Image (cartoon, one colour):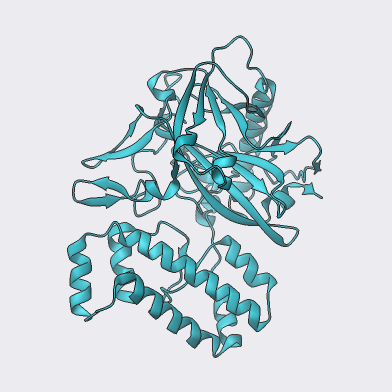
Amino acid sequence: MLALDHLAVSQSGTLQGNRISGMPWLRSNRLSEAELDSKSNPDDLHALLTNQSTFAQSALLLELSNVDKQSVKDWRKRYKVEQTTPEFIRDCAAQAVRKQLETPAKTRRLLQQLPRDNDYSTAARIAGLYPLATIPFRRGVVKEQAELKRQWGNIQGQRWYAYRPDTATTKQQDLLSRHAPTWLINSTSTANLPGKPYWQANQLNVNTQQAATFAFVSKGLWQNKPLTQLNYVLWFSQRPYLKRFDWVAGKHDALVFRVNLNQQSQVLAYDSIHLCGCWYRLFLPNTAKFRANHRYWQEPVLAERVETAERMAIYVTKDTHQIRYLEPAKAYANTTGYALAPFNDLLMLPTTNGSRAVFNQRGYVAGSERPERWLFWPMGVRNPGALRRFGDHAISFVGRRYFDEPRLLERLGLSE
């Protein structure tokens, strides 16, 4: 299984989770790290290893879909594999997990000693004199948040073009379909048409002839219980230059809107980022109990109060692709249907000789680099401004905060 894992890494990279050195049958993420810290009995370890193994198997199969078929054939021939590839992976993983469960204390110590997922560069922060650089950066963040707050709700006197999920292609009983938002954008210029990325030779382009939203389900924790997260990604061809020196402009832009549901499928909160991890926003139900945990050495959170509904309408500003307002969805003029597609489609886009993910082997969307990276590197965020895979979203320049942090809502100040 190690050889097969190396083959996937060499041609596809890591698209989901974090590989564990020497253990290709397991993968970790921040949720599994949190569960490792909070669980201690043998049954918990069995559940943890089972979840990590299931995650690793599905991720490896996804990555192998981007590996050329001849390489897989050569692997099968070299190691005399007669099973199908999924069967081989499943059986190898099950055998390895059973072996680890024979020595639970040793296995737990080994997992606890593994380095934790860290998307901040300590070296960059040291070289960039982070304690001093933080002062002007924090001021800049506060100023920008104040401007976004001032603009909140300013939707009158503009023509908004609505994109509603095409119910003909979805299952109404599915959570992702039921909560799929209606997007409203105040422009139909090319840079503001939500579309589908595609490969043309080695160039990643965006087809804006058919609107699309890419969706997936993730998990978090709320009051030590599972939290269901519905993620919706809207992809644009660019964030256009709005001035001569625009540090955040460039090719490709994507907006992420997330619905956080408790175990009763009630909305705890909505939140959002751009796919670079920038501009984290928190949208709270009017009745939610929230007390912001403000500290100087941590970037403040921009939070708004909203009325909630099963399907929300999201007003998105042209060019900057910022969320201007949220409201329960209703009937809108100038409405176009969009396709609700699995996010995994973006991880295996068709090419002339197979498939390829939108992310390169470093986890970035190639060509989405922004000029801001030459200014913002002292904050320790790697390649700031570039669109990146899920699991790598540092969402705060000041302090440390992650979009996939399991207890993020509690840490920000949301309570029962």
